[in-house]
Length: 238
Ligand code: AP5
Ligand code: MG
Ligand code: ZN
Image (cartoon, rainbow, N blue to C red; front, side, top):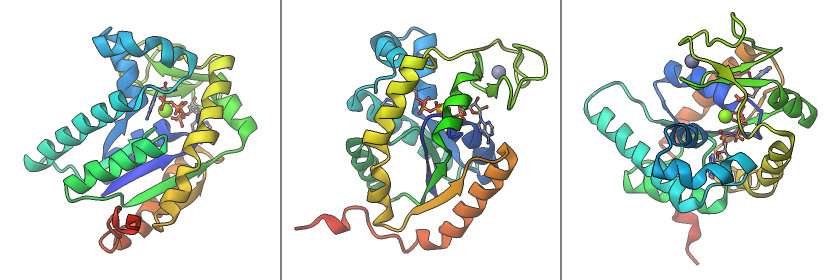
């Protein structure tokens, strides 16, 4: 089973992926998280992408796709070891047509496909309020909100005790740019998956727990059709 969580910045992809992954035995593949880790560790990749990331621009496709392929290999290895891994849960990937095609090809090479795409709907004004108040753990990436979901102790992560800070790309300018890129490049991908009957919409403007239940229900409904899913390249001849 391979599931994509799709929705604009602030719709709750990261929040929900952290709750749903363990529940359904899916390994989170969150490209934003991978990039933040590379930037924090000042790796070659991290240094190369830091300015792009801070401004809210997309990281080049070749770097992003390469990173996802590495994660898929890791998931395959864990599955082979019988570690109870049921597939991937994509958060923040794919974000444009190029990436969607590369993902289909990477899964096809592994004799797999996308099982379901969950679209998380949240009104624009609420997205902006969520991003303005978001805080994240510097150490483990746990997501908080100063008002909607604060850590128990101010500035301290509930999960690991790490420091809870604002993200570098949650400035007003970067948020505007990120949302613009989403509606221009990422949202149109929904049509690409709708053609294959893979999209389930969920109302994300509810308490975190209610959204989790709705997503789990949506994925579960889609699983029977997974076996019958057409091969992603089948419709492209001619
Ligand atoms: P990424 O890390 O993926 O960020 P994003 O797509 O901009 O999405 P967000 O993380 O902002 O939103 P989210 O939906 O995860 O919301 P969250 O759960 O945190 O990407 C960052 C950057 O990395 C990109 O700009 C780009 O530079 C690069 N990048 C990443 N992937 C890439 C790719 N594929 N290609 C190229 N470049 C890539 O929730 C938001 C807030 O709301 C939190 O405070 C949370 O506590 C709160 N909240 C969540 N749910 C609820 C609820 N139900 N009720 C109340 N509050 C809630
Ligand atoms: Mg996120
Ligand atoms: Zn933490």
